[in-house]
Amino acid sequence: MTPIKMFGVLRKFADEQGHVNIEITEGMTVSKFKTALKDVLSAKFSTFDPKMIDESAVANHSEFLALDEVIHQQKEIAVLPPVCGG
Amino acid sequence: MIKVVVSDSIIELSNVNWTELQLPHCGASNTFTGVVRNLNHGRQVSAVSYDAYIPLAEKTLKQIASEAQEKWAKNSSIFVQHRVGKLMVGELSVIIVVHTPHRDESFQMCRYVIEQLKVRVPIWKKEFYLDGETEWLKGHELCSHSDRHSDSSA
Image (cartoon, rainbow over all chains, first blue to last red):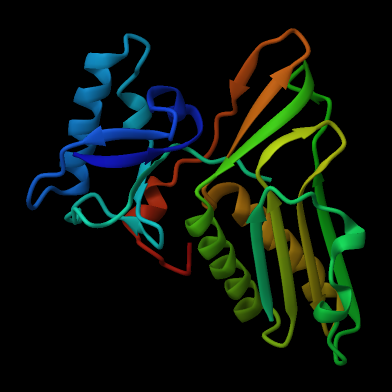
């Protein structure tokens, strides 16, 4: 299981370290990862709305990942909901 | 020169290293500060908490600053600092300082950096209200940017 970093409004679905554990399978794309994440969170939280993941980007510490990109297990993965800094 | 910081350090004008930012050929200095206000959409705000994915936030801010330099003035300096953690009303959440040869590009670059920051940098804001409730503010989706990776024309 790979710890996935959650931010902003998604933190309420994470553990105290801000992580959700998801199994990253060989060749898993960002798109498939988002589906797996939605399945895990839907099963655990009645207040979870899958739209929150649809609206979120996936990134590692240095770049945003495209939907068709394959996630490598060794990379740090973060789920980024819509932003509003400043 | 570009310097970017996203941290829980308090932002104060007196803490800015002006000597480092001032360049001999720059005759314009433009500063923008964002301040936590006490009212948002009719609700009384007592504090704001900022969350950030710091490594990617700093990288994206550097990219935005670089775009501004490329677009208006390569021979300029840009400093951006954004706070994370809980801030009370009146505290500075962000500061942008731009030094350029002439005033026009200093205004434009400062505006470009704050507008792009709001839609591209992974930072989130939760408001604390006087009635005891809290709410993460709705923002701008990053998906369109992620589909283009690090496209500097974004």
